[in-house]
Image (tube, rainbow, N blue to C red; front, side, top):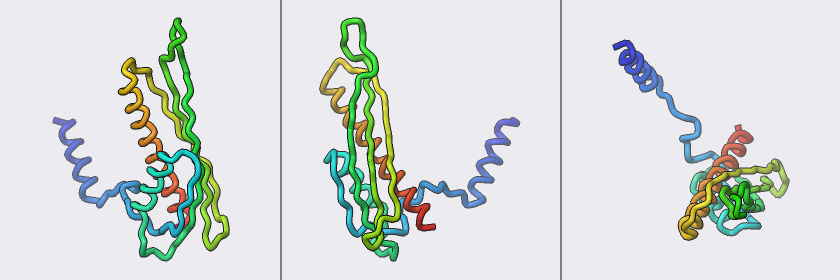
Length: 152
C-alpha cells in the first residue's frame, strides 16, 4: 500500500507542476541558411535532415554550418580462428558554426558503438546501417543542443 501511495504522489506531482523534459522541445529558435558537408554521404544526409527538420525557418537567429564526417569500423575481438567476434563503429564529426561569415563556434563530436558479429552477413549489414543511423541522429541532437546553449 505504501508503494502505491508513493507512485500516486509522484505521478500527481509530475503532472501538476507542468514538468516538460528539456530535450523534448523539437523546434529550436534558430535556422540554418546554409548547410555544407563533406565526408560520409549517408551520415551527412541524416544529419542535414535532422538539422533542417528541427529548426525554425522564421527565426531571426540565422547560422551557416559546415561539417565533415568520418566513419571508422574496427575489429575489437576475434575468435581462435581469426574471425571477428566484436566490432566497433566510430563516427567523428568536426563542425564550424558561422554567423555573417564569421566562425563563432567550432566543435568535434565523437560517437561510438560496439556490437557482436552476426553470421548472416545481410543481417549484419542492416544492423550496422541501423547503428550508423542512430549515432548520426545523436550527433545531430548534440549539434542542436550546443547551438541552443549559444543562443541563450
